[in-house]
Amino acid sequence: MIPGFDAKKLAAIAEPLTIGNVPAGLETLLLAELARTGEPVAYVMSDGHRMADLEQMLGFVAPDIPETQATPPPPKPRKPHRP
Image (cartoon, rainbow, N blue to C red):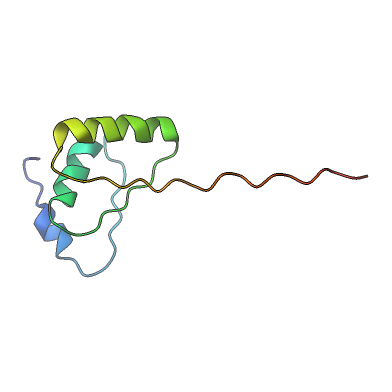
């Protein structure tokens, strides 16, 4: 629980919501609180290493919340450059 943070109030907003500048380490607690409202949550990260760390922390902080990770498709093979 995050003192002063009301996830249910945010979940009641009828339009998409963007939250930014969350301090490192607090993002796990924030995501757990938002997920417990029962509404869909999407979180975008800059790299896979941070995603793995976040998944591990969520498993510790909120083992009751199922997680789904959408990974990008593998890159398409490049065609050889012909001069």
